[in-house]
Length: 373
Image (cartoon, rainbow, N blue to C red; front, side, top):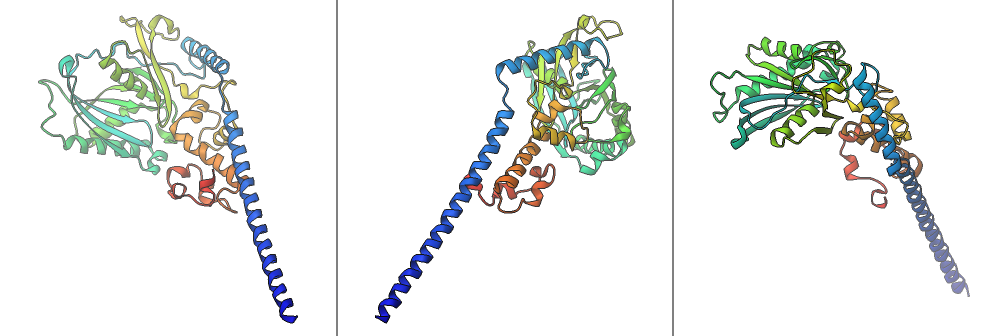
């Protein structure tokens, strides 16, 4: 009898343990299901906030057209700067010789040389190097930044092979692609109006960036002349025109975003000088600063803008360019981590740092719930 009671007790204990284990499993499943539901709900809400149906896109197009016209009429009359570039002729494919370029437009810059062979040879040979800009130089002084660029340029030219050669009588000339808002006064002169893309070299604002780089090159004892200052969009347009004379528009969507196009000179009302004989001029729109109430602004865009180096400015660029998209993703992940616990009971402290997705590998490795989303 006693043995039977003991066995019954064991069975009851086992059953209770099984029930408890089942309850734990059930609770865990309910918790995971709740996490998945909450996380999915956050994503769906964000997706819906970003929607741009065709009628809305047409409203955005109309708003941009109004801003473009206003920017061509007067300085400061539009969110779009609509800057005349002083470039009224573009390549036609006949160009020959050795040419150099410096491209500064983001956290990296490039130095390039290319041997052009005209209509028959086109691009015979091309070499380039990409150099990361130390973060401290993005917030330092003008001299520090341009001295660093000049040092890398001179080093690049010094390693030039025999495949590259100047034509007889040709000197070393550089095209300087500078992808920040400038007011140009000549094809090889431009005053910096404003930094974007995380740069804040304050003493360079209002200065001629061509003179700054030219001075840094000359201090190194090298004879190279900066022959043209262009925005990266203008450089892209010129490159496209070299291959196809029908190209009229160029768009950049990289670290930042911008567009340029060929405009009829007579439509540039604010142009005070003599109209170019070609009857046209390339306009640098600086459309990163475009804004319209019809754009789908979300809580992510508001938070990012408020915490940026230039709040209230370049809203369009902050919504679509590579400099900011990673941080948009981070902010959505933060909300999912806080409300759905997708990384466990605590939000990883690294995830709370702005732009951290550019630097850390832990997100690729994953943590709690990574396979459930």
